[in-house]
Image (cartoon, rainbow, N blue to C red; front, top):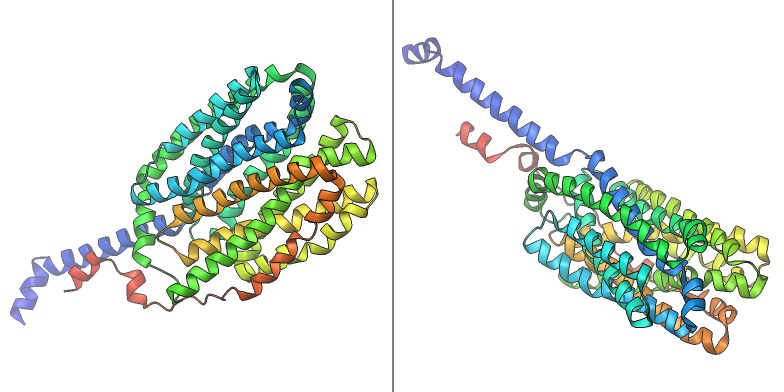
Length: 439
């Protein structure tokens, strides 16, 4: 008793309580830092994604100009898309895997530099091989940006991974939608050389991504360690995880081969069937891509609220009636139908990416690289195949054939519903330092 009184009089008890209080406060602050949503970072990477995809969307948007200037066939146009997208697809999973093992916070700015070089070459290319090289450089820039930016979106998401992925992807879709507008307003008016002017966007993106890299190197690493400590959020066996990833890959195939047929050949379809001018056809393409951007934003938020599986199932299969009607509609209804097609189909991808990352939570970059890479690669292969088929059968037949692709969405019924695993309160609220004080 006397010892206890002396202990309190000397202040040791007070100091111990103060130490425990300070450590608890520090732990709470660290927990808040690791779980809060960093909207400023999400806004920055979303805007840089907008710049990146705006620049890369210039390539398909000026296909009619390149076709006329270089006398290209549909097959050669398809191979240009193939070169750009396959370059990105082959590198993205590799970059995601390497940066999972060893994070590179400033690699995003370097990737934007490749896009800058590709734009400058595209503006001055004097031959078809140089056009292919320009496309490959832009593809390399995208290969770096997508898996690493998706990882940062996951780190900055806090408790809203679907919303974060949607915001990130929406930036890209908005960029893809305004690219054709810039092509119509600037490139069609001033010629192929004006593509170089868009290099200013790449320079702006590089400056912003350096600042994002600084956040990633400090706060992002704290969040990464916290997420790694939590481990998987499900108890699925390895075979079920692999099977689920295979189903997601099939769904990505159906979505992006159809998307490639729209983005690469929609303008040609409108020109051939309805006799539109290049400018009017590009405005129709903008309407479709704007709907894609909105659908991407909605998909992630709906996934956070109702579950990823529900959104995946509803979006890919739900678009089927609209795609089946599109090839038989008149000009007015073609424009109307393009809106729900873009809106519904685009809502699937944020849910697919987050679902895959939840299946394999310690390989966020690899999963993002895999799915973004597949999106580019399958889209590129699809564009090349569709181009070759269009040379033989015509663009209108190709649109009728591709309208059945969303039927693959039936496979979504086989995806497991992942119930979060229960955790003890102590595992999530106490740090090792607090345990030491308690002992």
